[in-house]
Every structure is written in structure tokens, then in C-alpha cells.
Length: 49
Image (cartoon, helix red, strand yellow):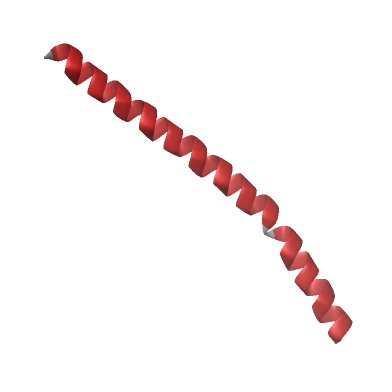
């Protein structure tokens, strides 16, 4: 019984840490991606004006 409980807890911990890594990576990608379109849009707006 205790072994299965430990295994379940370990599994949950691995899943949660994996999710954190994925979230951090996706946040980094979004942060990298966001400034470029904004700069691009700003340059278009200034060209149009």
C-alpha cells in the first residue's frame, strides 16, 4: 500500500514540475514573440501616419 501511495505522489510531483517547465517555456516564447509584432505594428502605424 505505502509503495503505491509513494509512487502516486511521485508521479503527481513529476507531472506538476513538468507542467511548470512547460508553462515557463511557453511564457518565455510568448515574451520573446510579443515585442516583435508590437514594434512591427508601431512602425506600420508611423508609416501610415
